[in-house]
Length: 425
Image 1 (cartoon, rainbow, N blue to C red):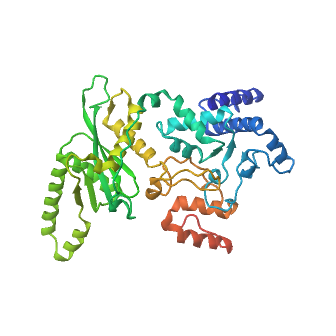
Image 2 (tube, one colour; image 1 turned 90 degrees about the vertical axis):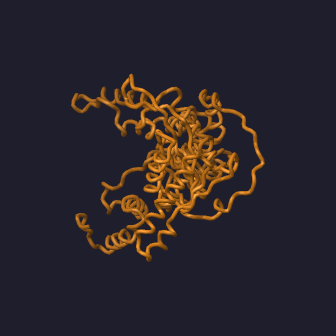
Image 3 (tube, rainbow, N blue to C red; image 1 turned 180 degrees about the vertical axis):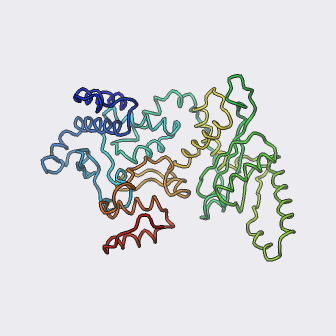
């Protein structure tokens, strides 16, 4: 609908242009798509919140009997109705502070949740609601999310009733706060048919998914492997620790490849330990990975990584279906599924618009959800034209947390009238 509206607006603007040079052609640009979306939002708000917009335009308060009176709505500079609140001075994105108000009756809300359902790879109710609430505040959003999930044919086919078991006490490693992936669980999923090349007549081979899950934050790391032997797992394990850091404890079932990998790591550790000076032996002992095996034939002891495998297959089956991917395509798909799983909320979503974004496993990894909607780029705007909060927000995204001290010094120089040399280091 956005693309069709964009083409209609382009045709309308091209007809008004007398010169052919100034006419738009080719593919749709981002500005055209955003302009069409703003037009659709204004039209739906004008239908659903006609009385509220009239009162706000005339400088009056929203009537108390209105369904959005408690949200303190206001009109922004583009005459779009947004949620008010007390977060105007917060250093968070503008759409998060003041999301766009939409009604549950208009079709645009349903289409937004349908798009979120596809973007999150047929995600759950909370994942869809969390994705939409980063830019929009829809009245009775959970009911719309339920309707989207009920009408999805793919989710209906794969939905099945599961029995609820009485679970035991959580192990202590899951209750002590540590950095992400310091204590990790491990499991394999598969097999999956993989094409050896992108040719149409290429042969297929078996592939597997190696899943690492943090025992504390529930963050997930997925690796595509081509075999169940020890060497293939060690290669996946090296890729994992190179990106996520060393593990002090690793938990898994009693698979033969895991037992063999444990013995191989112990041999390499002892061999390197004997060739190092004595003052480094104690340091290596603190960095070694301790492997823990659950009892044989007891998969309920590994419920955390079993649930991670289930969530991974939930997205994988709905996207792959009967297709056969190459190793590169499978690795890319697993990275996208990992992004969706690490962006799922860890706590129930709040109905209060003043609350910030829900906590996700990705917050422990990069500081925000990995499927956030990108905000406006402020790097090309002059520093004198930015407000304090916009400037600090743009600077923190550019320089990171490690450069906060330099950012504060630069901002103090600007306040004191000292010109900052942009070419200097």
